[in-house]
Length: 407
Image 1 (tube, rainbow, N blue to C red):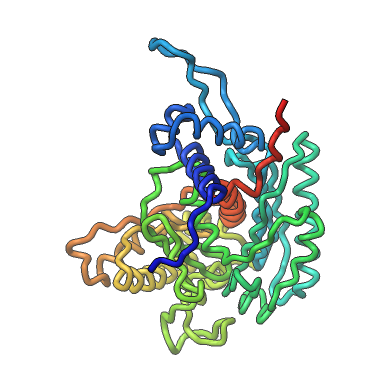
Image 2 (cartoon, helix red, strand yellow):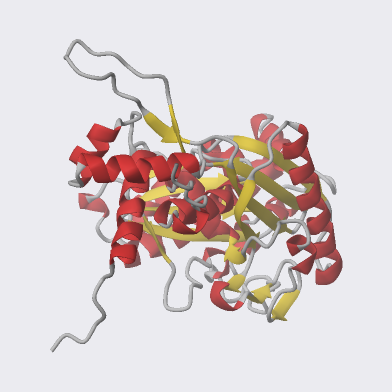
């Protein structure tokens, strides 16, 4: 006997509201109420009432009516509302803090990156600095004339994160460990009670490639996103969804062992991939001066500098070998290169493909693709802001305005 509670009218209304919102936000072209009704199977009267609630709550907006040759009232296209609800994406990385504010249309209302050295930094001080950055972001939005509600905040961190408990287990390159829960009060002071959620930076950056408020068919359904900084992060996307693993800790590609007898890594092991293909390792091997950047490495390779060419070749083969292990295990043949690898994608593509075709057992029957990630700078904060806004689309009810009184 089924003892589950019956779905009440209120719950059904919430479900239908979410169905209508998702249809509007996912549409390639702005749909009318009639088109939403046809796509969802709901009655036109139901759709019209739900759309009115979404418009009153500034989640959806109407465009000017469009006229057709057919008889009847002109269609009114529906689109996400602009500058009314926002998501905030924040990131702490080894050499910068950053933040992005997006609205429901996907437009960037503010974006700030603050360079710094956060290796072995004090978490409390760093989070205070991030709180200040958050205040600056929102001040920029308000100066532009917007006064939006904040849907949520996602904080991207380069390490093992337990989102449900707001715990950072370890971030070796920051030198942070076992922060349970991570104290985000310095951020909370500026976001009007909006929920703050922690996430791995590579996972959020992968969502920036994939999770758009409108469907984007240019991104494959399954891929491995690989992002380089001092460390190397990765995210596994299968059928347009993140594969997080049993505890949400998948994708630590930077700590795949390339050579057990190799150099010591900040994680405590030896011979990890990031000691061969992380940005610090690359720049050291290229014998570039302290303070050099990946752009300097690209210039040195273009000038046929022997040390730079050798460093990039070693990194590419190490990265390709680690990715071949991944493809053998997971069978996802598309690789998107982000972070510092975005600048190196053209130089790395062929050597990575060579490793894949040499080391993947199914190579004879496979086609591999290695591309620059479509979203580069600020991908983790963009993905974080988008994820916060996706919560509004999947459940608009908490964001509805109070119904208008009759009369």
